[in-house]
Image (tube, rainbow, N blue to C red; front, top):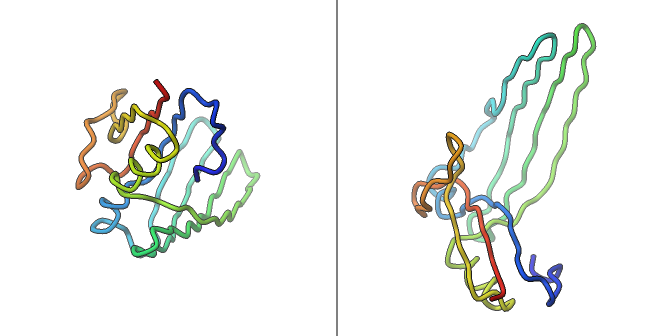
Length: 130
């Protein structure tokens, strides 16, 4: 992850799944992730993911169907994502020279929650060179 960061970067902002949360709460079967309707536009998305807890690698497999009127489009993206615990992430970022690291929890109702490694599904990270 950090090989792509310029040594001249002042800040690095991103979100990532929280491995500590995923170890106990990962959904190990297909599930409906999103269903929205707006006018004649309908979108549904299913996820059927796997997680290698020891390596922290999520294999993400999605099925997305978008219907506008009578026209249907289907998308089937797949990718891998490396995820980390808070401790692993802080160590990586500190090792890359970031000396102020702020980790917030999930975004809900227009606000960030306080990060809790057992309860936050994701980490919203602000890493800065100060």
